[in-house]
Length: 306
Image (cartoon, rainbow, N blue to C red):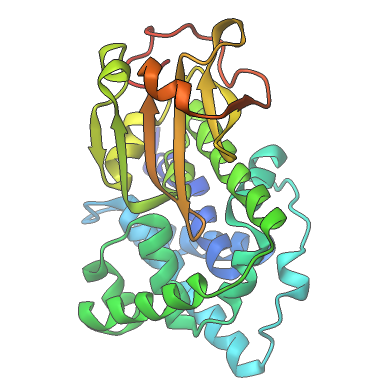
């Protein structure tokens, strides 16, 4: 394989991640594709020599391209999301599965895109990179032309505005279910970027003693560690509501044996709890709402295959 073919192969391995970053920043699939294509053109011109972290380098390039687009929009006063947020998600020549793109749009949520559109360009970039993709502020700072402390403030201001957005109860419940479903789909498909997209940077995974004894992870901290643990895992469970909140349950014969409880805040999963203690389960209102999310019996895919 010649050098350019190898470079193209490395780029393709990062395409889904880059597209996810660009879509969340721009809210437009067509503009996201353009930003990703521009990152390829820059990579093909410079080559990968001297690049220690290709994914990080490409993410930085895409972020800078998106920041330019956002600033251009603001300058032209074309910041309306009416057309962008409702833009149909279609398959493109890069081979992205339309189902994957629909899942991407669901996991972001049109309401969140509307709120993001109200942010200043640098705020949006800082918030998306840190809160949606767990990029540290010392890497975000040079992208937005600030020091790390100022970049943190940009993300903080954006976060407050996002948290202040109001959503109807039905819309909020549907979005939460979409986030949980997106988590399971990304885990099954080995979609690392998809997992990061729905996990809070400081997400925590915990299991009670009973769940831990049958293979659940006892405790995991941080989006990257959680994504690494679950990416490519077949999580045995059925969609369910747990005390009215979206979750999942391992329920052979319709009897819940293990439940997966998700805490979601501002569109991100902040906590995942594996509960299997019979006394605790008896106190929960567990209602199965769909078919199993995987076809693998418990215990064969530890730590998350239950």
